[in-house]
Image 1 (spheres, protein in one colour):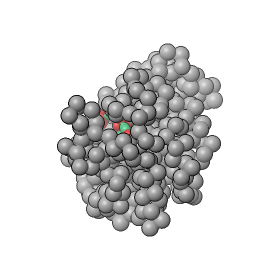
Image 2 (cartoon, rainbow, N blue to C red; image 1 turned 180 degrees about the vertical axis):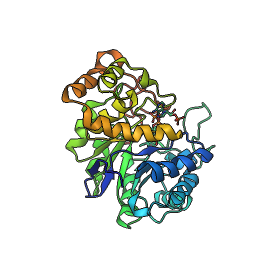
Image 3 (tube, rainbow, N blue to C red; image 1 turned 120 degrees about the vertical axis):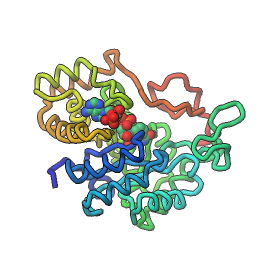
Length: 318
Ligand SMILES: NC(=O)c1ccc[n+]([C@@H]2O[C@H](COP(=O)([O-])OP(=O)(O)OC[C@H]3O[C@@H](n4cnc5c(N)ncnc54)[C@H](OP(=O)(O)O)[C@@H]3O)[C@@H](O)[C@H]2O)c1
């Protein structure tokens, strides 16, 4: 197995710090991407979700790789229409993947959408806004997450897209502290304060969209490119190695074999090569005028994040 950084979660379970993302990976592509990443490159962590509509193919890729199940860290996520029935949703993901257990199960977004609404994934109200269950408290979801964890169906549980504001509403009710919070974290949206808060609570930040998501726009960044050139690395390597150097999990997505391999090797190389000064420079890029989010679904509620423009105050009962 390729030597790679691992992070110990708050329950002692170890997670490989570099994982393959699978959002927007087409079913026929993701089989090969997952198989290749595990068998040929050395990835041991796959990030998936029920909402990506490709869990069956991710499972097929895992089986085709021939890598033993216990060597692979598999994450899936509870979709928002399923907050009232966590175990059933988890069982569906397990059946899709063809797995007996998950290594990590996350609440995808801290918002419950109407399970009896007009669409299975994104139900909407007559005015077109998302059909949010307004009297739902996130602790009602979390209690069920704790139950499937205690049953042994998942080795760890966590959240995604949770701001400090939401976590402050969840943590007083939690008997199991979330192991991770998966967030949009990258050069242009480093969320320094939120990550420091998470780490103070023993919650590991996981960085999604580390290349800027669709079309990898962050590869154009001049500062990251200059640092890459100086160390004879690719810009992608610097963007990924930067996150590893911060002690977070990073989840680059690709379905292109050459990129799947380059991201893995390059991230590990940059993690070793980047200096303290490089990290300090990269830390300042967003605040120096580049702050930008790429993933902002139109939830009709304020999730409590900084730098999420155009949102009305939180109107959920939480
Ligand atoms: N929890 C959440 O709400 C949430 C939200 C978003 C994402 N995520 C997770 O995080 C993962 C990563 O985020 P993401 O998919 O948004 O974006 P990303 O990993 O930042 O970027 C993916 C894009 O970059 C391209 N790419 C990858 N490596 C490259 C390279 N070395 N050179 C040039 N282009 C490259 C990919 O193209 P090709 O695939 O065509 O190679 C794809 O277009 C997701 O797949 C998902 O698992 C979670």
